[in-house]
Image (cartoon, rainbow, N blue to C red; front, side, top):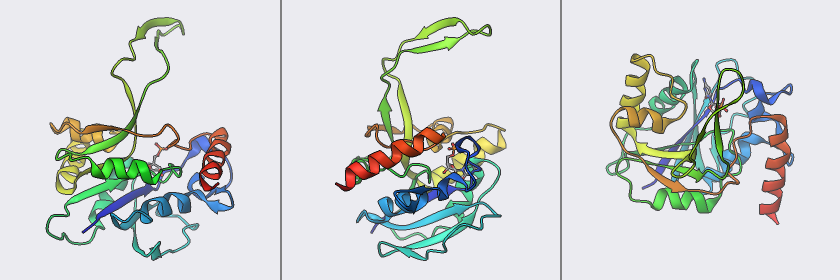
Length: 228
Ligand code: C5P
């Protein structure tokens, strides 16, 4: 019995620049999303993938299978939560005991097998997410661009993905956030609002979210180094 992964890939990626949507821009000669999907599908505990695409996506290569795992698609919405909810709806019916689901950004192609292991091995009934402790000192800016305060970094983490949650609880939590007019920037945020306390699992800083043009070169470096 394995876990299905929902991969939201329906964003515009406006900050990345370029002609292709960022998830289709090449890294080491393959579209970013292919690295992301293969990293998930290659793990023995991943049962299948639901990729959430923009309604007008003409770039999706139409994979039905990757690394021997089934690939389904869904059509995303205006906000991340809408896209993830659409992905959850496209999951196959439940098999007893496998009611957890993983959510992973298409824009994180450098996910390692080891981090996926760490996330899936953690016994976390309320869910879990990969995250990285902060290395930098944080400043809160005042309106005039001066330092208003230094935010102590002790206990602060950068949330990344994959994140793993009980499937029904996640759907409910995302719907509740939407109904309240709250934009959630990750799934853990919706779960917190619903009263859950997801576990933070320390992951590699290499699992970057490719966002700006310089991130593409960094992602290629990280992927190439791993392939050696
Ligand atoms: O924009 P950002 O980099 O935070 O997006 C994270 C992931 O969520 C990306 O893979 C993006 O394609 C996806 N997304 C989505 N639907 C949206 C917004 C973002 O699937 N409406």
